[in-house]
Length: 278
Image (cartoon, rainbow, N blue to C red; front, side, top):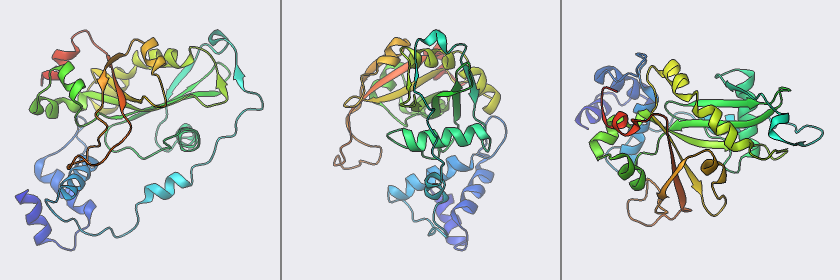
């Protein structure tokens, strides 16, 4: 805190980006590939400001994220709904939607216009999967991003205390969005997609970020969904959330209760998530 306040006092002309980059340099805060963890630093600064520990410089321009999401092009559905047996769509093609690619624009448009939560820009490590059928038609979008900062049932299941969780949180990833477009009506497709991705996500994470992930998590809003596809894909239900948000310091904010699911990617996932060297 002293370092941050000192920089704010000494450089009132700095914007938020300049501040976060300076912190990364001073703390040697880098990811496994040696790149500065700029977005993680900005997230930390926002949390400290929300907690009342400091006041950041005013934004000099509106955040581009809202405009970017509003401009996402809707995806035209096919002339006929995609129906039938799963075998008629196979083999499915699972690809990573790289930033700036045509697949990324398609992914963005599908989530922005077809997912009930829409599409928000992710902060931190993430991977976007676009799944196509044998004819090249998009049939699923799956987004993985930063794990929840804390979750009582998950942390107890893994065996995390606070310091261990903070050290190893980046070795867990959250399935923050999962979309089967409404015009795709194929039994067992969702659980099959989850299985395909579970078999490759560790290698994809290693290739992109220089370290693996050892388990997947997700939170299913129980008033909307039953979590059937996750259970069918052998995800474990660990419990439920308390109906609060991470910003609810005074126990006043109520949000929908969600079921907590976890999918281990290794037999020794607990040890891997508690050990600095695995």
